[in-house]
Image 1 (spheres, rainbow, N blue to C red):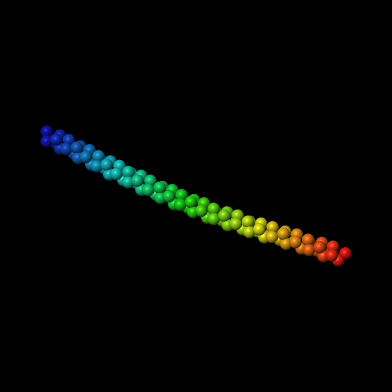
Image 2: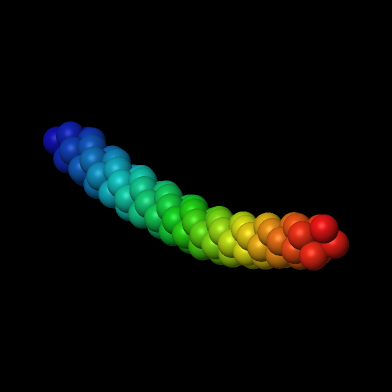
Amino acid sequence: MKKKTRKKKKKKTMKIKKTMKKKKTMKKTIEKKKTMKKKKTMKKKKTMKKKKTMKKKTKKYTMKKKAMKKKTMKKKTMKKKKTKKKKKKKTLKKKTME
C-alpha cells in the first residue's frame, strides 16, 4: 500500500515539474516574441527615419537644382538681351555710317 502512494506522489511531482517547465518555456517564448517585435519596430522606425531623411535630402537637392536652373535661365535671358542690344547698336552704327 505504501508503495502505491509513493508512486502517486512521484507522478504528481513529475506533473508539477512538467507544468513548471512548460510555463518557463512559455515565458521565454513570449519574451522572445516581445524582443523580436521591439527589434522589428526599431528597424521600422530606423528605416522610416532613413526614408524621411532621404526624402528631405532629395527635396533639398531638387530645390537646389530648380534654383540653379532658374539662375542659368536668367543668365541665358540676360545674354540674349545683351546680344539683342549689341545687334541693335551695330545696325544703328551701320545706318549712321551710311
